[in-house]
Image (tube, rainbow, N blue to C red; front, side, top):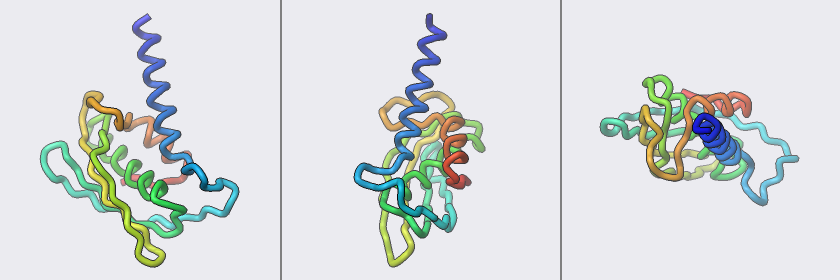
Length: 135
């Protein structure tokens, strides 16, 4: 029974991850969405605290920029041998056509406490299926 509970918990994490990458309420998924991802800058702040700076063109709203940063954090966690990340904060700014995100995540081998956690392996897979590049 414990094994089944673990599977259900992971399915819940996957569903939450997918919903986080879905278009925000009020945003039509029927329109043309052709983003141009401009790059990811990764800065180790302290121990397991990492800053991700992303830039893109063609974002529909802040959620697209936040998803790009989330995908970067997930891949970074895997590169560092960690399986999880926890969102600390994200700010988004727009200047002309360029949208910039500045996000901070903690990276850990064990599932961190909190509500805004990411299973890195699941997230990287989902990002790939959505066409969002990672680190």
